[in-house]
Image 1 (cartoon, rainbow, N blue to C red):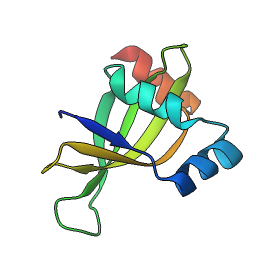
Image 2 (cartoon, helix red, strand yellow):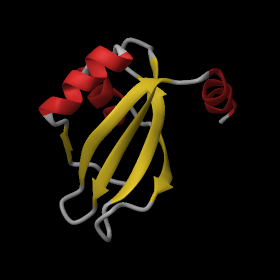
Image 3 (tube, rainbow, N blue to C red):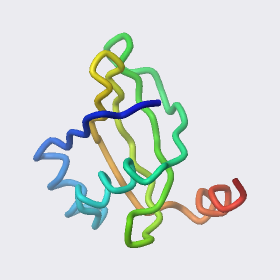
Length: 95
């Protein structure tokens, strides 16, 4: 999957900071740092599906970032991000 643009709406930035203690900068770093991406669910609009990326920020923090991928513009729209669970981190380390 090729991502040329990353968008994080302002209300999502606020939610990430207050609820998950993740900055939009960290979420963007993860998407730029060769993450493992998997399909999460069908999107509400045809072709705009939800994916989850697992990886590390440039500082080494392990995160899961959920985003909508718009293939026509190769754009990722961040919808949520959080620290990886222990189970996700264990699986991430095996690959």
